[in-house]
Length: 126
Image 1 (spheres, one colour):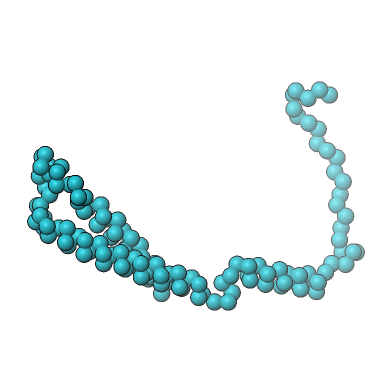
Image 2 (cartoon, rainbow, N blue to C red; image 1 turned 90 degrees about the horizontal axis):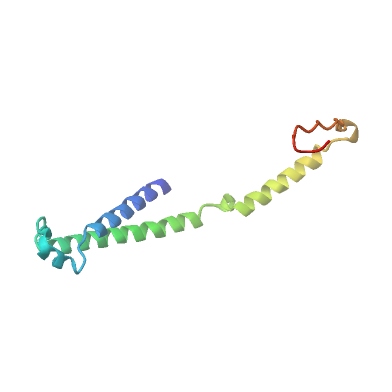
């Protein structure tokens, strides 16, 4: 369910970005007067602003709704979804298992002393 909402959220975000980039600003008609000439080619002069404004508003509403839905889903996952609770539960489990399976002093082997390797550096005086 969460993956479906996330996919819709991403598509709505891409739709908002695309529609905002396609829309003309308030000063775009002045640029059309100096030679760009394509201001009213697809939807007419005012038709594109009405259609694109409506489509942008719809995509923004979908984006807002999916944002709220994802926030709600993230906050109501379950009791074990908290990182702090999982960490404290793991610490409790490991402390209980270490107290049950503690090593006896006879089982522990001492570390062997190894001589230090000679230095291979050229600039160190010997």
